[in-house]
Image (cartoon, helix red, strand yellow):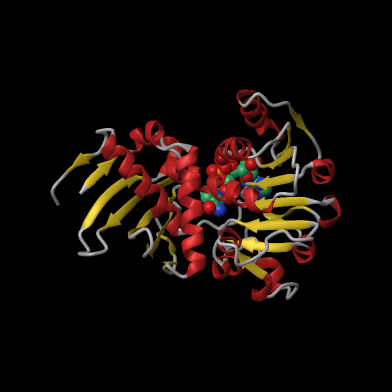
Length: 320
Ligand code: NAD
């Protein structure tokens, strides 16, 4: 099997390769060529860790595998980031393990790619102002991908912990764009595209804040109980997601669904817009993409990085 260590990923994986891999796998899911398997996520009762697996099979890309890992909240004491993961790929013809790939940076890149793909298909025409809610580790990746694949002239941002806003200001400066810290009503009024990427457990962006036309990529909610958006805002918008079942159970739409403001038939897989099965934004004022994070995204970027690593002599072959 091929091993691609975490330390090699930054020099191998490009945002373009991540974007293409995620766009292709969302389309494969919509065509019924690829499916995610049920997610396992368990508190292990040690170090307050949450550990789990996300797997699937893409019959179009012939990619089979899983991402294993989770969240270890005390990792700073070990000099490590809290999210830790590794992707394992298997030969779909034989079941033999074919690759082990560091999954930490890939997770950030594939999550950012998913929201950028959603903006490509759903952002209002002529979107110029990007609004960022959240200023943690993922936010810089999100901003870089949004700017790379969009046509933004300005970034505005808000974070529940204002001391973290320097990350947004520094990332915007790196991208050559002006940045302004604003309150949420201003953000909701001025931003054409909003990316939310926090660990919030209650609504931050309220219905009254958002003046369309706006596209919102809600990327932070990936667990039961987390929440970034007002359910009334969700009920007013046209809704898209990576995986419908996940969005209603662990994604942002869990709350509006629990309050019976929306039902399963209101939520459209983004892949259907990519394949042309669904018109996408149409005449909707507000669109929301609920990015819950699916295993097939991880497998798609891992497969791409293994190919790049082999081409560039950065993958190590080991017998197992
Ligand atoms: P981080 O710990 O680096 O940053 C956390 C962010 O959330 C900061 O903006 C912080 O101010 C805010 N925050 C923390 N606690 C909060 C609270 N109680 N209420 C409101 N805001 C709070 O985290 P990160 O790595 O940037 O990840 C951000 C979120 O994205 C996490 O919830 C993570 O699970 C999620 N995530 C989702 C996907 C996906 O595929 N959808 C992938 C990776 C991460």
